[in-house]
Length: 401
Ligand code: UDP
Image 1 (cartoon, rainbow, N blue to C red):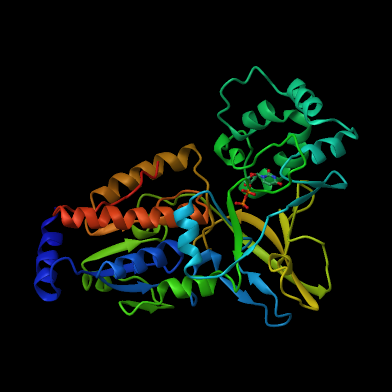
Image 2 (cartoon, rainbow, N blue to C red):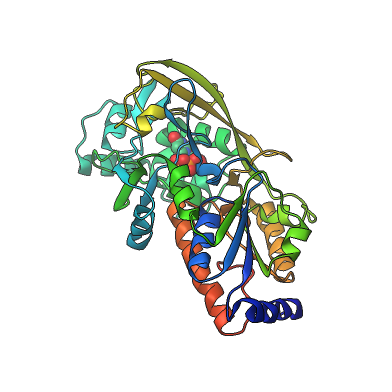
């Protein structure tokens, strides 16, 4: 245990009774909110700060002023999980409406169903194959020389072959990530299934849905606890940290250190808003696989809340680009050079006391919402166990590498 931490802990034991600490949560997204809530329930006093003017981080939702449509301000967020505990957890703070993500893609002059399924395959090849026939057909195109796919491209060529890869993945991925799929890890493509039936549900998870009034009210209810104080438009300062016993940091890992060792690579997104009447594209998300279309996808937000009725409609064209200073980081890139820099930041972080790095940005990983919540719950357990054992709280509750 670091001496500074030991001293503050002893002071607070005296001031507020055994175990009660004054904790600073940097970031009011899902990680910050769940940690704040559970640590407040455990008896600690929590200050939550966020530099933006709203809670809920990148799952923030708000009503579009012109159309009244509920908008996923930072892009599509659909809740899906196999984790019953996480599913039950979010139900406590919002009613959820059943929602299945059915994504389409426009590529090579036609519209196809995603994720790649029997309908996609039959339509793409102009065939009427059965599941077994399609499996054999795709298998014949797969590159069997690739036994252990490491890159995105190898994964695609091994499992769907060159035609489907070129049409649906190559162009989209180059636009999304700004590099060749040969440079990206196979894990990105492993997020998407390939199905030899007509199931076009984008996710295979047991529990799927959408919070009825959006993610921001859900996060607001998580944060609604007498031991939690939330301060928006508030930047982190060392002074603020000094007034607390421990910091949980859900901002960018490199940002905590003022990018001292260099900047970790992220992709950011730009959105171009447009409004219309009725139904403009007929689905919530339309991807665009061709490189001559500059956007990656168009989201028509009203389709995320099919239980609501709105005359107007609002669409966001989504464009991905490199994240510069001052941009909002969305996707950690994690190419080879970033992994090396990440490793250096981990070493630096482990030599720093009084802070725990959490969430997508704090651990520099591509996390879905359910995993973020699961890790936040687990981090509270780890933190509490460390305190109970008189040990220093962990700098990382999960291994970011
Ligand atoms: N992807 C693709 N074509 C698509 C959809 C996805 O090539 O039409 C690739 C792309 O590299 C993307 C990854 O698969 O980053 C994961 O897709 P997902 O839909 O999970 O992305 P998210 O919604 O998290 O941006």
